[in-house]
Image (cartoon, rainbow, N blue to C red; front, side):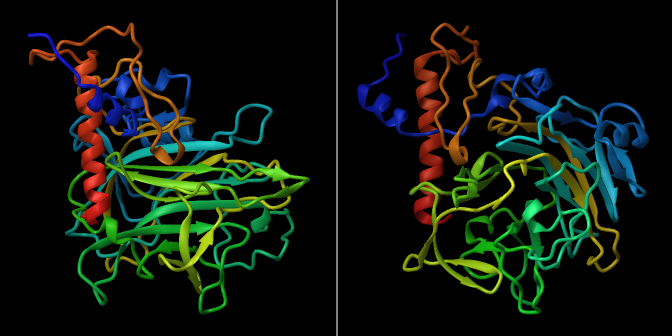
Length: 387
């Protein structure tokens, strides 16, 4: 039977802005590491913990083993299991350059709720000027104080999207940003800890449904640097995060991604009647401060037993949106860079169709349109009804 795609459907699809990333070109991520936009990848399939440490460049892995528990779509047979404090750090600045202007990092993670009641910190994406071979967070320090190596906050930035558990406030796990940058705000103790961008002061309501940590999640964060005008940084930097391919939060500089609200100590509380946050000034006077490291940190010293178990797998760092792993190719040639994850990605006209055994083919216009439309309705429904 000939497939017919109505013009109205095509026009709706054109505005859908689905979030298909470069991973949609590679079934179960096989071959993804060879994609030209990929900077670094780690699947924890080969070698010992020392081999993993050497691939990354730096690591402290006293409580790491390898597990057969892997994400459903993974082609691998093992993941990294961390029990207690562990971390890996990779500095990925290209040869002769200080880093990148825009970077995406995707990793898979899950937690053991039986052993985890608190997490202090999770993975970070950031930059140092000059690039560093190991983490040096300088948490809590005054960003205006220059240290002996020039790495005050003007020479560094970092951001993470972290899981929180506050049973004294509300049961379950919640998520929010934890961001360091030159113009960050101090906490009530007068020290500079990470800043959040929330709607309630301590978590993002849209992420409350993501609180079953006994399953694997695809987590992806993006940072885009701010520009320089006449030697000074302007407020147009961005960050965004996706959980299982769904855009959860973006802090941007475009009208569609700018936040409205007010600062309350170290949290930007989103309110419709608040002022506009133009964007993030990741760098103020240093054009060579660029995105150049990823720190996969499993820091659980606040956990009751300090033995919180977490699993990590299928880490990818790239210059384009990555997206979750797929078990079938969605678009053989998908993968254009989205701004805050919402740019459209379409199959090439001459891409070979993939037979799905359903009377349609994956490379066909009908299948593409229906897939895009389904993704759009799913995302819009959740946005409108906050579900």
